[in-house]
Length: 111
Length: 113
Image 1 (tube, chains in turn purple, red):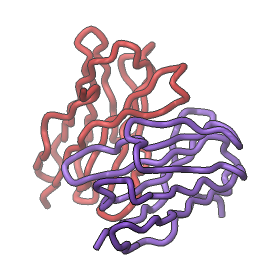
Image 2 (cartoon, helix red, strand yellow):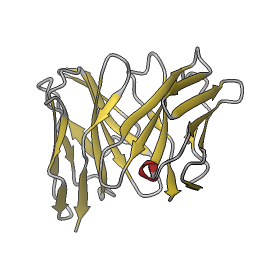
Image 3 (cartoon, each protein chain N blue to C red):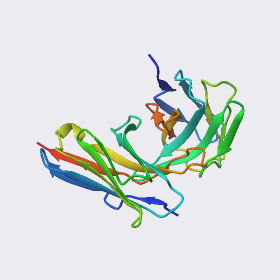
């Protein structure tokens, strides 16, 4: 079964801690994306990667970091520098027709 | 700077009637537009898209219309069904952007039986 997965579904973090969100896909797509969604707002792009070992900042990259060591994996680290990390985080990958496929999301709550 | 705007946060329609969701954009570089549907606590799922070389694209009950001069697109759902109740996001991209999508704020559609 091809798809994109995110783990964990719910994540709690204390202030001052870094935390890493997992995103894995077996669709063989080159491009992957991280978005965050806040209540009443659309999805905002954090980082994206068009190919292995390469990534670019999106619109709200401050306080986040990513890596793309493997095609299948695009983990996102939320650092202590991110001022408002509580949000719903969505990972996506893109096919050759420009369609993005989204994972189920991770809800991060900072306590 | 909100480049994609969905001015209606919510829309309520009766089952069987038409639902019309609207989206406006400001960036004239956008050349490809998509609609996504999202249920709570899930990732969005792709519905339908349209290229800027077209003004209409149809897929079953879903039709997207694009008015480039007005920088406006709309999604029509006919007939509306209770299962269509969800948040609908409009998104836009352009050819050299790395296919990064810019999303609107979303419209909550409620279809009443």
